[in-house]
Length: 81
Image 1 (cartoon, rainbow, N blue to C red):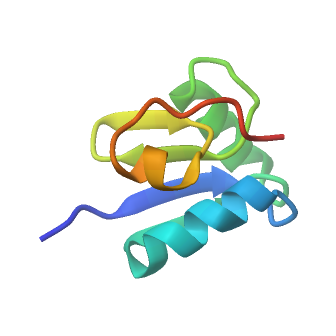
Image 2 (cartoon, helix red, strand yellow):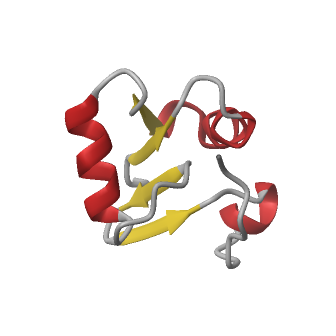
């Protein structure tokens, strides 16, 4: 069984939308633009970075999304807002 993935982002971020589509049903999306408490949670998880998307998969936290490279465990590069 695969772990649930949490994606912190905004509804207007194209990289967030790409991540949501790529992870599909496994992903739970949290819109940090609509919830200041969740924004603070995201900032804590990302080590103080205010870049989206922040993707949490188990103990692994990734900032940014680069399509298939991110899904294969590659190093995500800056691709957020």
